[in-house]
Image (cartoon, rainbow, N blue to C red; front, side):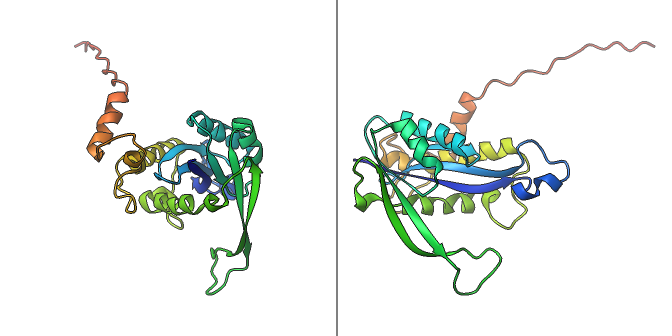
Length: 233
């Protein structure tokens, strides 16, 4: 049985949510942005993603999309985010082996700073549905994957001025990165791309292949209208 892991990664557009009210000329969609990701633990393929908020509505939309992409019963692991409980139940019903991995945090140790993360003091595996295999209840792969967007997309890098200024370019960048991750980037452990490991393609794609596919799907640009203007003497 294949195992899948879901998680969310935080970023923001224009300003953090707590600062939007006092921001000057904040555009629509300004504030915190979350990217929901579903990862195949074996092939490291991103099978589904969603950009938006972190509430129950987005959780339901995300999990329904993930369920629609799967043809067989799978094992699913998420963190302890409560929105997953209703979302997984609504999308899969009883046709899933689902567990939560809940991490407990304490005060950070060592050199302390403004953004020092809490120290993980322990984990708890909680069975929610079906009979998940405890050996595969883990969020390590997807948490490691969360590092790649922060390295590969400056929009996700913390403590810089490279954050997205508008929502739409941010969304398109996430789409481009996901395609790059699945089809172009060679995973060091697999020694091939996730799409090759999953059997979606037998060849290694290049960025030229990816751009050609995007161009083929893009609508043909409209030709500008030309007006004949008479200038009277």
